[in-house]
Image (cartoon, rainbow, N blue to C red; front, side):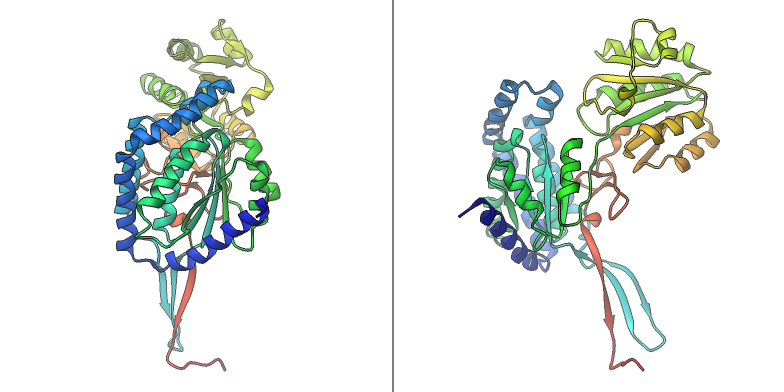
Length: 417
């Protein structure tokens, strides 16, 4: 069988499975999720062993430290993956949930209810935990799933998928969960043309991957684009709060999309705030690339280039710019940002409201770290990723975002005149 035929067979099987899982009871779905959670914990030695193959290959290929960190499956992370599945099991099943009902003068009762998409294909890079999170969310929302992880996490993704399929074969319909079993790039191209059976495609990863998928896919795409995230420290900010938020947003886990890449500081406080802030970041190992005004305040930093304002470093590097006002900060975010997550630190309610209203990002914060842009942190159990699109979903994409809707119309013999 050719690779093209193999991919077509996978998508056809997923479509047939989607008809079965759409009607699966909440009880059975939760039973499968809880069994998945248990099996992950029981098999952590196997998962770590398979993950080590990817880690060794990544080091051999000289992947960055931040990518290696994203790849790594420690017992702690496996436990977190298990917990996410338990959290998803505890959430309300969105399938069949009523959005709205009304009655027409002719007696027709019309309902708008949530229903699964059908087949969801996810294309992703680096992070093996995405595998179990995506499986859990698609299962609970009544969709079948096709996984196509990056080659750098091939062994980890295959191991996670295999044990979850094996653990639930007596509960779930066959082929509800499938993984593309090859690293061949042509498999991706064939998948992108499988609009006959794949209903929605979700890419998450680097800019080149997202652009390639969006350009070549034949089915609807919900993009999970890069995170060029900002913190703006307003002239009315509390310095100690601002320092803690910026440090957390940059250093707590720099290799993820909700870590900040640019710090904007109001010129009224720059001379007093920046030395304190930048010394703290320097001590944490952060490389600073600042504008010319920032260089005058703190001479030891590197001078930023125009390209730095667009950059998603995913590393301990931070671009810093002094701005004249909140208006300039917002304009900078509009020009260079990626509509992901942006924050203001301020004690001024008017400026906070202004920032919330005018910054057009999926998640906008006041006095909090951007690192909270996460389905689990938002109480959603897990996420498929952070959508930077406006249709059909935006921000953390969890259970409700993995459903569409349909109308139910109940009558008692009405005909149209």
